Every structure is written in structure tokens, then in C-alpha cells.
Image (cartoon, rainbow, N blue to C red; front, side, top):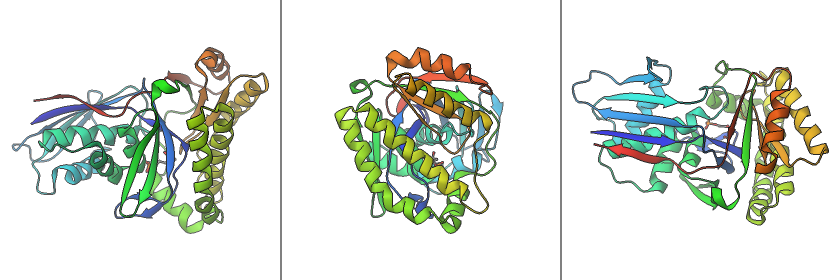
Amino acid sequence: MRATAIAQPNIALIKYWGKRDLELNLPAVGSISITLRDLFTEMQLELDEHLPADKLTVNGSVDETMLPRLSTCLDHVVGGGRVRASIVSRCNFPVAAGLASSASAFAATTVAAAHAAGKPLGVKALANLAGRSSGSAARSLYGGFAELENSDKKIIVSTLCESEQWPLTVVIAITETGPKAVGSTEAMEISRSTSPFYANWIDRQDNDLKTARNAILKRDFEQLAAIAEHNCLKMHSVMWASRPPIVNWNSATMRCLQTVRKLQGNGVGVFFTIDAGPQVKAICLPEHAHEVRAALAATEGVIDIMESGLGDGARLVEVS
Ligand code: PMV
């Protein structure tokens, strides 16, 4: 059977950093994200009993980098004794560079695999399966503003606000295109076991989630901006204080933050967030997107700009 699914990456405004159960890949904290509309990963999957092994092409070329993790994802969804799969992936943004490419890849793979295997799973089950491969992937099953909560041995994701109910724009300043040095699972474990700030990070997260949830429900941009920037800088403080330190920023990352501060000083509705990579995501009111984009594009060290509205959760494109 063959199935194709598409998923958009999501950007966390209240971030998850750390795992509570490595085996089940359960995050140590809840998180809140926005799903993007204009960046995508499409996964076409064919289960084929004649194939000796799984194979993967990414944007037209054989690329086995992600194959071990994708094969494990297929084992989770289809079952361990499954037939092998041919996976064809298309993506319109740089992978493994802090742009949540794993979130959209695993969300799309989970949806495609369930349909290719003829398993009619609901979105909650799909989110739990996607989350086993990448914690943030569970959120890409949902559109708009999504919250992920931990509940015993599973996760529960829900939409706080649909994309069209609060249509913000995300401008992404790309400052580097290479893959990151350390994967997030390994980096999170380093933080958990060595960062002196880790326990405080875990303790304070419920407060940050509550503040952000209220801001989203009230559509209070200023309140959301303040808590999202605080939560982002706190996560990076945990990472920087780890041993060895986990520092993904470069000098252009810092210059982008200064650009955002200058825009804010001029009354522009914008705030920043940064994930485990050097790219800066500026979230802004749509009427300010042009100005934000121009200011970030003119910032020294920015090599490319991407822009996106908010969009929907992962979905099936075709099944045959
Ligand atoms: O989904 P993972 O396991 O690659 O972790 C993502 C972690 C951050 O992007 C840094 C934060 C988040 O909540 O997305």
C-alpha cells in the first residue's frame, strides 16, 4: 500500500527541553507551539514486500541520514515484523538546522504509515506515535496554537486557538545552514544530568505555560511576547550552563535579537524565539511582517529569510 502525507513544522513558544522517560520519549515538561503554514515536509511511503531494506530519498537524492529514526518510527506505527518501505521525502526548508524539520518529518511519516498499513488511527493516537520519534512531532499533528501536556504514560495535545482565530506571521532569519553538532535527545540528557539550572527550569514551566495559555486565549500579544522570550532565554540558559555547554548561537543570532529589540523600541509588534539551532524566529502581527522581514534581512550575517503564516495539522494527501 502507498500513502502520502504532508506536515508543517511547529515552533515552540513555551519550549520543551528534557525527557521524563527516555524509553517512551516522554517530555519532562509541557509545551505550547504554533504550527507553520508555508514550510512543509511531504512523505510518500510505499510498503513493499519485495524490498530487502527500507530506503529513503530526500528531495530527489538518496540520503540515509534520517533512515534509522524513520525505520524505528515505522516499527512503532506499522509493527515490528512489518514489510520494508520505500520513503520519498520532499521538504522546502533546510533540515536538521533548528527549523523543526524532525517534527514535520515524523508527523507526516506517522500519518502516511498508518494509512499505508490500513490502520485507521485517530489524531490522539497518531500524536502519541509521532511523539515517540520526536517530542515536538506530536504538536505538528495539530494546527494553530497547540499545547502538549504529559499525562502518565502518554501525551495529550490540544488546539488552544485555530490559526485563523489569531493569524500571526513568523519571519525566520537563517544564519547558518549546516546540520547541528549534537542531536536534541543527547543534548537534553546532558542538560538534565549537568545543568545547575535544570531543576528550576522544570519547576517553573507550569507557570510559564499558564501565562502563555492565558495570553493566547485573550489574544494578548504583549503578554505572549514577554513570556515566550523569557521561556526561550531560560531554556538557552539551561543549555549554556550544561557541561559540556550547548551553545547553538552564532554572532548573527545575537545581532538578530538586537534587531528585534530595536523594532520593539519603535512600537513594532514582534518577539523572538530560538530553538536548538542558530536561526531566529520573529513572531509578529501580520501588518508588521514587511518591516520585520526587511530589518532582519538587513542584519549582518543573515543569509536567508523565510516567512510563514500559521497553518493546519498533518494530513493525508493520497492513499492507494
Ligand atoms: O522534538 P525534539 O526532541 O527534537 O526537541 C525539540 C526541542 C526544541 O525544539 C528545542 C523545543 C521544542 O519544544 O520544540
